[in-house]
Length: 112
Image (cartoon, rainbow, N blue to C red; front, side, top):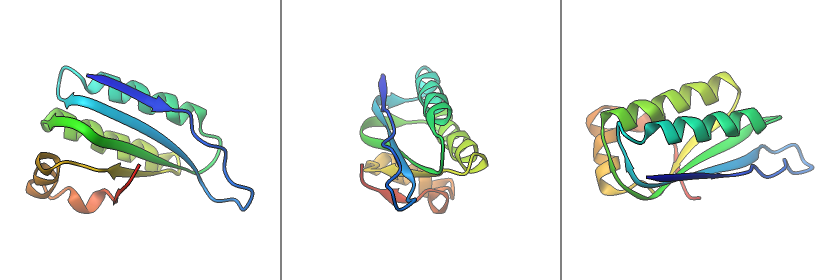
């Protein structure tokens, strides 16, 4: 899996939150959740104000329970730091996992 993140944009002059995008490519499973955790830590370290953290899943082909746990940890870490975490373009398998585990309501779904 290749995971990358874009440096967050500066907050607009009107005080709206900044935005960071973490792109997940390939699988989000036990072997690859470390890359997501590392990208999230980097985004949190760079944020100097409220930030919308977008996890772009359009190229994520599979997510297992460890991947879902990583997303839940990311959500909690973001909330504790005053940020909002949004899932962008989750595929059918990801949406099914979210609904089967009653996690869907925890994540706003958006676009990257």
